[in-house]
Length: 253
Image (cartoon, one colour):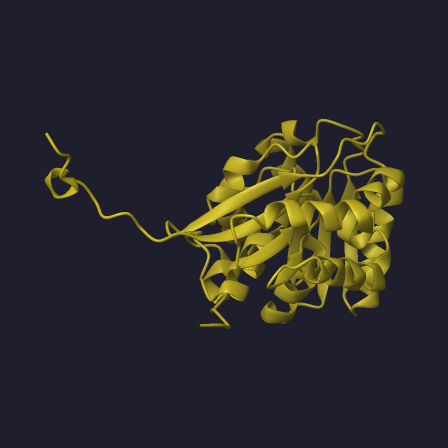
């Protein structure tokens, strides 16, 4: 008996559009990234090669090596994403503003139709919010956190207070309570927003509650990365009651 697809009941298959994601080898929050993704957008994930060092300036520098980012971009282009996102905050700020621009250029030259990085997305998001003075929470040791502060300064963004958790590994195991405590401790009245760095720090469920508690936008690495990538596609991110998501409007058709 011939199979008749019309006899199969169920929803019509939705046409999928993709985001290529170049992530660090230890990235553990694929599921969190999906939470900002609309139903008709898929994430095509690839990971950078393992680097046998702790989370230091040296690791961040290794993860931003142009040759491995170029190859990872080429690897993720097979399913034809509309944009490629480099989802590593430290890897994209560690060489400063010029380093971030060069990283974006490497992705585009490798064939990506559009590109964004986590640190570039942060600057873009702060500009959208009109915030130029922020408080920062990171999981990093001080030498890495200092590079983030310097990167932001190059973009005219002042960091009024910062705190690093001093972690050298297993960042994805940080709990929500630790993050909330760190944000509460670092916030200042003159901070127009708070940023929680590192794409390996889980944050989705606490963004809106923190914003209500602080009365200001709270940005996180995965949030700004996904919002930026989706804007380049002409899509809006999912994320109820998050200030950045509510503000963001697509810039492309």
